[in-house]
Length: 105
Figure 1 (cartoon, rainbow, N blue to C red):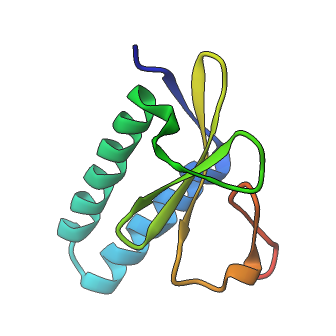
Figure 2 (figure 1 turned 180 degrees about the vertical axis):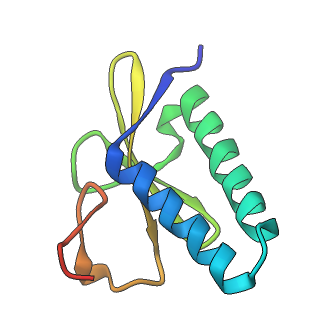
């Protein structure tokens, strides 16, 4: 049975920023729509198979790779908490475990 998905405020903002970046860069919504669909499909898979993601050093936090992005999520008893979406081409020094970026960009 699929677990309920809960998006953190940070993860929601991450996704919006990523999709808006591609809309502005490409002057089109086409790629952003495709990328968002990939995020949605990956999260559906996570909800059904929570253990599918790679373990991190933080207990309970896993990573699912979608193209150049890492979806950080935490498995809870009845739900999956989406913590963050991180562009893995960015400086890893600005990311702490659990998918939180530091205040410096």
